[in-house]
Length: 264
Image 1: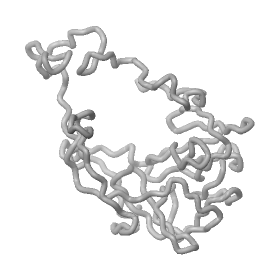
Image 2: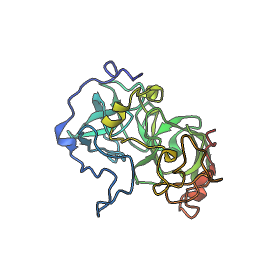
Image 3: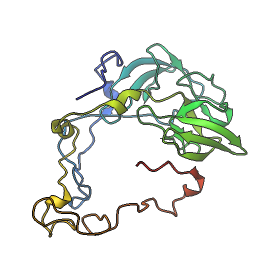
Image 4: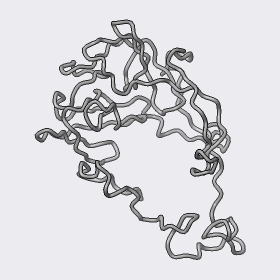
């Protein structure tokens, strides 16, 4: 097992109570109680932090009060206090410290944590929590260690290259925050035992070839039998291997200029 040592990265273990709420657990079941997403259920109890992905308080400076762990996301979060007295949780970028001041606005300074439109950010800058369209709130580059590099400005579009190597067009009026998301070492963590998965609400996955024929297309046979079918399939017989799952008619399809490379 290898884990990220949080103690020197977060400043408090007590969250801000007015920004907490309990989310209902569904354990992968729909409104009729039927399992639609397998291998979910159990796990430690946790409270959701009410989050501000949009940061619409423009030109109102905020001071970072704490850097905290969030059980619902891989990155760290920051509790900020605005000049008007309101508190909010925002994504914490790498190297943000308690006492730092951040601000969102059309002409905010180009410092880590500040938020401004892509049209006012120079080419080559790393950004995170990027809006897909203006005033929609951050959608891209929100998980631990991720970022988007601003490659170019073309008319009303900004060209972004994400850490996954995908290249995409985004409206230049969309807001983005300067920097890289915190906790980049999360990708190096190794849970090390099955119990850690259970704590996170992930139930065991049984190999299809170990099932009976009635339960899966790969089931049956004596011992470690081969798959018995040429194409890889899911439990219902739908082709899975190499089949593209993204909807070709999705509204944002036209903005993807280069897809991320296939993992071998």
